[in-house]
Amino acid sequence: MLASMASHQWRQTAAKAGAIATGTLLAVALAAPGQAAAHQRTGTPEPSSSATPGSGLDRQALRRSLDAAHEAGMYGIYSEVRDGRQTWQGASGVADVDTRRPVRPDMVHRIGSITKTFTAVAVLQQVARGTVDLDAPIARYLPELVPDERGQQITVRMLLNHTSHIADYVGPAFPSLLEGTTSSLDEHRFRTIAPEELVRLGLAATPTGQPGATPGMYSNTNYVVAGLLLEKVTGVDAEEYITRNVIRKAGLRHTSFPRTARIPGPHSKAYESWYGFIDPPRDYSVYNMSWASTAGAMVSTMSDLNQFYRALLRGELIGAAQLAEMQKTVLVWLGGGQANYGLGIYSADLPCGRFWGHDGGVFGMGTQSLASADGSRLLSFGMNLMKYQRLDESGQPVPNDIDQAILEHLFLAVCGQSAGATAKSAQPPFVPFAADRMLVKR
Image (tube, rainbow, N blue to C red):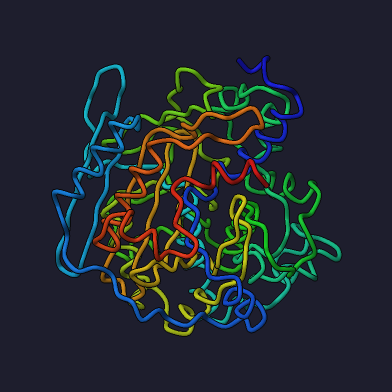
Protein backbone atom coordinates (compact mmCIF):
# COMPACT_ATOMS: atom_id res chain seq x y z
CA MET A 1 0.00 0.00 0.00
CA LEU A 2 2.87 2.36 0.78
CA ALA A 3 4.49 1.60 -2.55
CA SER A 4 1.39 2.70 -4.42
CA MET A 5 1.58 6.19 -2.95
CA ALA A 6 3.58 8.71 -4.95
CA SER A 7 6.91 9.52 -3.28
CA HIS A 8 6.27 13.25 -3.18
CA GLN A 9 2.81 12.83 -1.70
CA TRP A 10 4.10 10.47 0.97
CA ARG A 11 6.90 12.82 1.99
CA GLN A 12 4.51 15.74 2.18
CA THR A 13 1.97 13.81 4.23
CA ALA A 14 4.38 11.94 6.50
CA ALA A 15 6.54 14.93 7.30
CA LYS A 16 3.60 17.02 8.39
CA ALA A 17 1.75 14.24 10.20
CA GLY A 18 4.92 13.19 11.98
CA ALA A 19 5.39 16.68 13.32
CA ILE A 20 2.34 16.29 15.55
CA ALA A 21 3.22 12.98 17.12
CA THR A 22 3.11 14.86 20.39
CA GLY A 23 1.23 17.79 18.95
CA THR A 24 -2.37 18.87 18.75
CA LEU A 25 -5.23 16.42 18.51
CA LEU A 26 -8.18 18.78 18.13
CA ALA A 27 -8.31 22.13 16.38
CA VAL A 28 -9.38 24.79 18.83
CA ALA A 29 -12.26 27.12 18.15
CA LEU A 30 -10.43 30.10 16.76
CA ALA A 31 -11.18 33.72 17.45
CA ALA A 32 -12.80 35.78 14.71
CA PRO A 33 -10.08 37.21 12.40
CA GLY A 34 -10.50 40.80 13.61
CA GLN A 35 -10.37 39.85 17.26
CA ALA A 36 -7.35 37.60 16.71
CA ALA A 37 -5.48 40.31 14.84
CA ALA A 38 -6.20 42.86 17.55
CA HIS A 39 -4.95 40.49 20.21
CA GLN A 40 -1.81 39.79 18.21
CA ARG A 41 -1.01 43.52 18.22
CA THR A 42 -1.65 44.11 21.91
CA GLY A 43 -0.29 40.89 23.41
CA THR A 44 -2.87 41.11 26.20
CA PRO A 45 -5.35 38.48 27.38
CA GLU A 46 -8.46 38.27 25.24
CA PRO A 47 -11.69 39.55 26.75
CA SER A 48 -13.80 36.97 28.52
CA SER A 49 -16.94 35.68 26.91
CA SER A 50 -20.18 36.53 28.64
CA ALA A 51 -21.59 33.12 27.85
CA THR A 52 -21.47 30.34 30.41
CA PRO A 53 -21.19 26.56 30.09
CA GLY A 54 -24.39 24.57 30.08
CA SER A 55 -25.58 23.50 33.50
CA GLY A 56 -25.99 19.92 34.61
CA LEU A 57 -24.82 16.67 33.07
CA ASP A 58 -27.00 14.69 30.68
CA ARG A 59 -25.57 11.33 31.65
CA GLN A 60 -27.56 9.27 29.17
CA ALA A 61 -26.65 11.55 26.26
CA LEU A 62 -23.00 11.50 27.26
CA ARG A 63 -23.04 7.72 27.36
CA ARG A 64 -24.74 7.51 23.97
CA SER A 65 -22.16 9.83 22.43
CA LEU A 66 -19.30 7.58 23.57
CA ASP A 67 -21.13 4.54 22.22
CA ALA A 68 -21.60 6.36 18.92
CA ALA A 69 -17.84 6.98 18.67
CA HIS A 70 -17.15 3.29 19.25
CA GLU A 71 -19.83 2.22 16.80
CA ALA A 72 -18.30 4.58 14.21
CA GLY A 73 -15.00 2.72 14.45
CA MET A 74 -13.08 4.04 17.47
CA TYR A 75 -11.72 0.99 19.27
CA GLY A 76 -12.05 2.45 22.75
CA ILE A 77 -12.80 5.83 24.32
CA TYR A 78 -13.09 6.93 27.96
CA SER A 79 -14.10 10.23 29.46
CA GLU A 80 -14.73 12.20 32.63
CA VAL A 81 -16.90 15.33 32.80
CA ARG A 82 -17.26 17.61 35.83
CA ASP A 83 -19.78 20.36 36.45
CA GLY A 84 -19.21 21.90 39.85
CA ARG A 85 -19.63 19.06 42.32
CA GLN A 86 -21.19 16.72 39.76
CA THR A 87 -19.00 14.14 38.04
CA TRP A 88 -19.75 11.73 35.22
CA GLN A 89 -17.43 8.99 33.98
CA GLY A 90 -17.96 6.72 31.01
CA ALA A 91 -16.22 4.37 28.62
CA SER A 92 -17.13 2.52 25.46
CA GLY A 93 -15.34 -0.07 23.38
CA VAL A 94 -12.37 -2.33 23.88
CA ALA A 95 -8.88 -1.92 25.28
CA ASP A 96 -7.62 -4.94 23.32
CA VAL A 97 -9.07 -5.84 19.94
CA ASP A 98 -7.97 -9.48 20.29
CA THR A 99 -9.21 -10.32 23.77
CA ARG A 100 -12.11 -7.81 23.66
CA ARG A 101 -11.16 -6.60 27.13
CA PRO A 102 -13.34 -3.51 27.71
CA VAL A 103 -12.02 -0.02 28.32
CA ARG A 104 -12.68 1.63 31.69
CA PRO A 105 -12.95 5.32 32.64
CA ASP A 106 -10.07 5.06 35.13
CA MET A 107 -7.46 3.68 32.76
CA VAL A 108 -3.96 5.17 32.77
CA HIS A 109 -3.31 6.81 29.41
CA ARG A 110 -0.46 8.46 27.51
CA ILE A 111 -1.40 12.13 27.38
CA GLY A 112 1.13 13.37 24.82
CA SER A 113 1.36 17.14 24.57
CA ILE A 114 -0.81 17.80 27.61
CA THR A 115 2.59 17.27 29.25
CA LYS A 116 3.41 20.76 27.96
CA THR A 117 0.98 22.36 30.41
CA PHE A 118 2.75 20.64 33.31
CA THR A 119 6.15 21.75 32.01
CA ALA A 120 4.96 25.34 31.55
CA VAL A 121 3.59 25.42 35.11
CA ALA A 122 6.96 24.25 36.43
CA VAL A 123 8.80 26.98 34.51
CA LEU A 124 6.35 29.62 35.76
CA GLN A 125 6.98 28.49 39.33
CA GLN A 126 10.60 29.38 38.70
CA VAL A 127 9.53 32.71 37.23
CA ALA A 128 7.70 33.45 40.49
CA ARG A 129 10.86 32.61 42.44
CA GLY A 130 12.94 34.95 40.31
CA THR A 131 15.26 32.29 38.90
CA VAL A 132 13.79 32.58 35.38
CA ASP A 133 12.84 35.71 33.43
CA LEU A 134 10.24 35.04 30.75
CA ASP A 135 11.68 37.71 28.48
CA ALA A 136 15.34 36.82 28.95
CA PRO A 137 17.21 35.12 26.09
CA ILE A 138 17.56 31.39 26.48
CA ALA A 139 21.32 31.85 26.04
CA ARG A 140 21.41 33.40 29.53
CA TYR A 141 20.63 29.96 30.93
CA LEU A 142 21.72 27.49 28.24
CA PRO A 143 24.42 29.20 26.14
CA GLU A 144 25.89 25.97 24.81
CA LEU A 145 22.56 24.35 23.97
CA VAL A 146 21.23 27.22 21.86
CA PRO A 147 24.38 29.06 20.78
CA ASP A 148 25.17 32.13 18.73
CA GLU A 149 22.60 34.66 17.58
CA ARG A 150 19.58 32.37 17.94
CA GLY A 151 20.28 31.89 21.63
CA GLN A 152 20.31 35.66 22.09
CA GLN A 153 17.13 36.23 20.06
CA ILE A 154 14.94 33.43 21.45
CA THR A 155 13.42 34.15 24.84
CA VAL A 156 11.92 31.78 27.40
CA ARG A 157 8.48 33.14 26.52
CA MET A 158 9.04 32.34 22.84
CA LEU A 159 9.75 28.72 23.75
CA LEU A 160 6.57 28.41 25.79
CA ASN A 161 4.26 30.10 23.24
CA HIS A 162 5.87 28.50 20.17
CA THR A 163 7.17 31.70 18.59
CA SER A 164 10.83 30.62 18.76
CA HIS A 165 10.47 29.10 15.28
CA ILE A 166 12.82 26.28 16.19
CA ALA A 167 11.77 23.38 13.97
CA ASP A 168 10.17 20.22 15.33
CA TYR A 169 12.50 17.26 15.90
CA VAL A 170 9.93 14.48 15.39
CA GLY A 171 10.49 14.05 11.64
CA PRO A 172 14.29 13.83 11.92
CA ALA A 173 13.98 11.54 14.94
CA PHE A 174 11.88 9.09 12.89
CA PRO A 175 13.55 9.45 9.46
CA SER A 176 11.69 6.68 7.65
CA LEU A 177 8.56 8.79 7.87
CA LEU A 178 10.24 11.16 5.41
CA GLU A 179 11.34 8.29 3.16
CA GLY A 180 8.11 6.45 2.44
CA THR A 181 7.66 3.95 5.28
CA THR A 182 6.64 3.81 8.93
CA SER A 183 9.50 1.45 9.83
CA SER A 184 11.06 3.98 12.22
CA LEU A 185 8.11 3.57 14.56
CA ASP A 186 9.09 -0.07 15.08
CA GLU A 187 12.86 0.29 14.84
CA HIS A 188 12.94 2.89 17.61
CA ARG A 189 10.45 1.25 19.96
CA PHE A 190 13.08 0.66 22.65
CA ARG A 191 15.52 3.44 21.78
CA THR A 192 16.61 5.85 24.51
CA ILE A 193 17.32 9.30 23.11
CA ALA A 194 18.68 12.14 25.23
CA PRO A 195 16.81 15.46 25.33
CA GLU A 196 19.96 17.25 24.18
CA GLU A 197 19.91 15.13 21.03
CA LEU A 198 16.26 15.96 20.38
CA VAL A 199 17.11 19.65 20.63
CA ARG A 200 20.08 19.20 18.30
CA LEU A 201 17.79 17.66 15.68
CA GLY A 202 15.35 20.56 15.96
CA LEU A 203 18.05 23.21 15.78
CA ALA A 204 19.70 21.53 12.79
CA ALA A 205 16.50 21.73 10.75
CA THR A 206 15.51 24.87 8.87
CA PRO A 207 13.88 27.44 11.17
CA THR A 208 10.18 28.02 10.52
CA GLY A 209 10.53 31.81 10.81
CA GLN A 210 12.26 34.59 12.69
CA PRO A 211 12.28 34.37 16.52
CA GLY A 212 9.26 36.17 17.93
CA ALA A 213 7.37 36.35 14.64
CA THR A 214 3.66 35.59 14.67
CA PRO A 215 1.92 33.41 13.82
CA GLY A 216 4.16 31.06 15.72
CA MET A 217 4.74 27.45 14.72
CA TYR A 218 3.99 24.61 17.12
CA SER A 219 7.18 22.65 17.86
CA ASN A 220 7.92 19.96 20.40
CA THR A 221 11.54 21.08 20.49
CA ASN A 222 10.52 24.17 22.46
CA TYR A 223 9.35 22.13 25.42
CA VAL A 224 12.38 19.87 25.49
CA VAL A 225 14.48 23.04 25.77
CA ALA A 226 12.12 24.18 28.55
CA GLY A 227 12.79 20.94 30.42
CA LEU A 228 16.55 21.45 30.13
CA LEU A 229 16.06 25.02 31.38
CA LEU A 230 14.30 23.63 34.45
CA GLU A 231 17.22 21.31 35.13
CA LYS A 232 19.70 24.17 34.79
CA VAL A 233 18.02 26.54 37.24
CA THR A 234 16.85 23.94 39.79
CA GLY A 235 19.74 21.49 39.71
CA VAL A 236 17.13 18.71 39.63
CA ASP A 237 16.12 16.40 36.80
CA ALA A 238 13.18 18.05 35.03
CA GLU A 239 10.86 15.05 35.32
CA GLU A 240 11.64 14.78 39.03
CA TYR A 241 11.02 18.51 39.55
CA ILE A 242 7.66 18.38 37.74
CA THR A 243 6.69 15.31 39.75
CA ARG A 244 7.49 16.95 43.10
CA ASN A 245 6.26 20.46 42.44
CA VAL A 246 3.39 20.09 39.97
CA ILE A 247 2.00 16.55 40.03
CA ARG A 248 2.16 16.10 43.81
CA LYS A 249 1.13 19.69 44.51
CA ALA A 250 -2.03 19.08 42.48
CA GLY A 251 -2.70 15.89 44.46
CA LEU A 252 -2.58 13.62 41.41
CA ARG A 253 -2.26 9.92 42.17
CA HIS A 254 -2.03 8.33 38.74
CA THR A 255 0.07 10.86 36.80
CA SER A 256 3.76 10.28 36.11
CA PHE A 257 6.69 10.08 33.75
CA PRO A 258 6.95 6.27 33.34
CA ARG A 259 10.34 4.77 34.16
CA THR A 260 10.00 1.97 31.62
CA ALA A 261 8.53 1.44 28.16
CA ARG A 262 5.33 0.13 29.74
CA ILE A 263 2.35 2.17 30.92
CA PRO A 264 2.02 1.78 34.71
CA GLY A 265 -1.33 0.58 35.99
CA PRO A 266 -4.46 -0.66 34.18
CA HIS A 267 -4.34 0.63 30.60
CA SER A 268 -5.51 0.12 27.07
CA LYS A 269 -3.39 -0.88 24.14
CA ALA A 270 -2.43 1.92 21.76
CA TYR A 271 -3.33 1.37 18.11
CA GLU A 272 -1.75 3.42 15.34
CA SER A 273 -3.19 3.37 11.81
CA TRP A 274 -1.15 6.20 10.21
CA TYR A 275 -4.00 6.99 7.82
CA GLY A 276 -4.39 3.35 6.83
CA PHE A 277 -0.75 2.77 5.93
CA ILE A 278 -0.46 0.51 8.97
CA ASP A 279 -3.20 -2.01 8.25
CA PRO A 280 -4.40 -3.44 10.52
CA PRO A 281 -3.49 -0.81 13.12
CA ARG A 282 -0.51 -1.82 15.27
CA ASP A 283 -0.22 -1.67 19.05
CA TYR A 284 2.40 0.76 20.40
CA SER A 285 1.45 0.63 24.07
CA VAL A 286 4.93 -0.69 24.91
CA TYR A 287 7.22 2.14 23.81
CA ASN A 288 10.24 4.01 25.16
CA MET A 289 8.90 7.55 25.46
CA SER A 290 12.26 9.29 25.86
CA TRP A 291 11.66 10.68 22.37
CA ALA A 292 8.82 12.80 23.80
CA SER A 293 10.58 13.98 26.99
CA THR A 294 9.08 17.05 28.71
CA ALA A 295 7.11 17.77 25.54
CA GLY A 296 4.90 14.69 25.73
CA ALA A 297 6.04 11.65 27.76
CA MET A 298 3.57 11.71 30.67
CA VAL A 299 0.75 9.35 31.54
CA SER A 300 -2.37 10.21 33.53
CA THR A 301 -6.03 9.40 34.00
CA MET A 302 -8.98 11.48 32.88
CA SER A 303 -9.86 12.19 36.50
CA ASP A 304 -6.34 13.37 37.30
CA LEU A 305 -6.33 15.65 34.25
CA ASN A 306 -9.57 17.32 35.29
CA GLN A 307 -8.23 17.76 38.81
CA PHE A 308 -5.02 19.28 37.40
CA TYR A 309 -6.73 21.85 35.19
CA ARG A 310 -9.16 22.79 37.95
CA ALA A 311 -6.26 23.38 40.35
CA LEU A 312 -4.36 25.37 37.74
CA LEU A 313 -7.21 27.69 36.82
CA ARG A 314 -8.12 28.25 40.47
CA GLY A 315 -4.61 29.46 41.27
CA GLU A 316 -3.54 26.48 43.36
CA LEU A 317 -0.37 25.67 41.39
CA ILE A 318 0.92 29.13 40.43
CA GLY A 319 0.04 32.66 41.48
CA ALA A 320 -2.38 35.01 39.76
CA ALA A 321 0.41 36.90 38.01
CA GLN A 322 1.86 33.73 36.52
CA LEU A 323 -1.56 32.44 35.48
CA ALA A 324 -2.17 35.75 33.72
CA GLU A 325 1.09 35.24 31.80
CA MET A 326 -0.05 31.74 30.78
CA GLN A 327 -3.24 33.23 29.37
CA LYS A 328 -1.57 35.86 27.21
CA THR A 329 -2.03 34.29 23.81
CA VAL A 330 -0.56 34.74 20.35
CA LEU A 331 -1.54 33.19 17.05
CA VAL A 332 0.19 29.86 16.48
CA TRP A 333 -0.12 27.38 13.65
CA LEU A 334 -1.58 24.18 15.10
CA GLY A 335 -1.88 21.81 12.20
CA GLY A 336 -3.26 23.75 9.27
CA GLY A 337 -5.14 26.33 11.33
CA GLN A 338 -4.24 29.12 13.72
CA ALA A 339 -5.06 29.01 17.42
CA ASN A 340 -4.70 31.36 20.36
CA TYR A 341 -1.84 29.76 22.28
CA GLY A 342 -0.59 30.95 25.64
CA LEU A 343 2.18 29.39 27.71
CA GLY A 344 1.43 25.69 27.61
CA ILE A 345 -2.33 26.13 27.14
CA TYR A 346 -4.64 27.43 24.44
CA SER A 347 -8.02 29.10 24.53
CA ALA A 348 -11.11 27.87 22.74
CA ASP A 349 -14.10 30.19 22.36
CA LEU A 350 -17.19 28.02 22.16
CA PRO A 351 -20.84 29.13 22.07
CA CYS A 352 -21.08 28.42 25.80
CA GLY A 353 -17.98 30.39 26.77
CA ARG A 354 -14.22 30.39 26.80
CA PHE A 355 -12.34 27.22 27.65
CA TRP A 356 -8.68 26.58 28.34
CA GLY A 357 -6.75 23.38 27.88
CA HIS A 358 -4.53 21.30 25.67
CA ASP A 359 -4.56 18.05 23.80
CA GLY A 360 -2.02 15.48 22.79
CA GLY A 361 -1.36 12.57 20.50
CA VAL A 362 1.35 9.94 20.59
CA PHE A 363 1.56 6.76 18.56
CA GLY A 364 -1.76 5.04 19.24
CA MET A 365 -3.22 7.31 21.92
CA GLY A 366 -4.96 10.68 21.86
CA THR A 367 -6.23 12.91 24.67
CA GLN A 368 -8.18 16.16 25.05
CA SER A 369 -8.69 18.34 28.12
CA LEU A 370 -10.82 21.49 28.27
CA ALA A 371 -11.82 23.57 31.28
CA SER A 372 -14.02 26.62 31.74
CA ALA A 373 -12.19 29.75 32.88
CA ASP A 374 -13.19 29.26 36.52
CA GLY A 375 -12.42 25.54 36.50
CA SER A 376 -16.00 24.54 37.23
CA ARG A 377 -16.81 22.70 33.97
CA LEU A 378 -14.18 20.21 32.81
CA LEU A 379 -13.78 17.50 30.19
CA SER A 380 -10.97 15.04 29.63
CA PHE A 381 -11.22 12.07 27.29
CA GLY A 382 -8.79 9.54 25.86
CA MET A 383 -8.91 7.20 22.88
CA ASN A 384 -6.82 4.27 21.72
CA LEU A 385 -6.80 4.53 17.91
CA MET A 386 -4.92 7.31 16.12
CA LYS A 387 -4.89 8.65 12.55
CA TYR A 388 -7.84 6.46 11.68
CA GLN A 389 -8.85 8.62 8.72
CA ARG A 390 -8.03 7.59 5.15
CA LEU A 391 -6.42 9.87 2.56
CA ASP A 392 -7.88 10.92 -0.76
CA GLU A 393 -5.91 11.18 -4.00
CA SER A 394 -4.49 14.57 -3.01
CA GLY A 395 -3.27 13.32 0.35
CA GLN A 396 -6.05 14.90 2.39
CA PRO A 397 -7.82 12.87 5.11
CA VAL A 398 -11.38 11.95 4.23
CA PRO A 399 -14.03 12.96 6.82
CA ASN A 400 -14.82 10.12 9.20
CA ASP A 401 -17.92 9.32 11.26
CA ILE A 402 -15.71 9.06 14.33
CA ASP A 403 -14.99 12.78 14.03
CA GLN A 404 -18.64 13.75 14.28
CA ALA A 405 -19.27 11.39 17.19
CA ILE A 406 -16.33 12.83 19.14
CA LEU A 407 -17.53 16.35 18.36
CA GLU A 408 -20.97 15.47 19.71
CA HIS A 409 -19.46 14.15 22.93
CA LEU A 410 -17.30 17.25 23.35
CA PHE A 411 -20.18 19.69 23.00
CA LEU A 412 -22.44 17.67 25.27
CA ALA A 413 -19.68 17.60 27.86
CA VAL A 414 -18.64 21.25 27.90
CA CYS A 415 -21.79 23.04 26.73
CA GLY A 416 -24.53 20.63 27.73
CA GLN A 417 -25.84 20.77 24.15
CA SER A 418 -25.47 18.66 21.03
CA ALA A 419 -22.99 19.62 18.33
CA GLY A 420 -25.89 20.32 15.98
CA ALA A 421 -27.35 22.89 18.34
CA THR A 422 -24.06 24.69 18.91
CA ALA A 423 -22.40 24.46 15.49
CA LYS A 424 -24.65 27.17 14.05
CA SER A 425 -23.21 29.77 16.40
CA ALA A 426 -19.59 28.60 16.53
CA GLN A 427 -17.29 30.85 14.50
CA PRO A 428 -15.55 28.89 13.10
CA PRO A 429 -16.79 25.46 14.24
CA PHE A 430 -14.81 23.28 16.59
CA VAL A 431 -13.55 20.43 14.40
CA PRO A 432 -12.56 17.12 16.02
CA PHE A 433 -9.18 15.57 15.26
CA ALA A 434 -8.42 18.34 12.80
CA ALA A 435 -4.73 18.39 13.62
CA ASP A 436 -4.32 15.04 11.90
CA ARG A 437 -6.48 16.30 9.06
CA MET A 438 -5.33 19.89 8.85
CA LEU A 439 -1.63 19.28 9.18
CA VAL A 440 -1.43 17.53 5.85
CA LYS A 441 -2.97 20.62 4.23
CA ARG A 442 -0.36 23.05 5.44
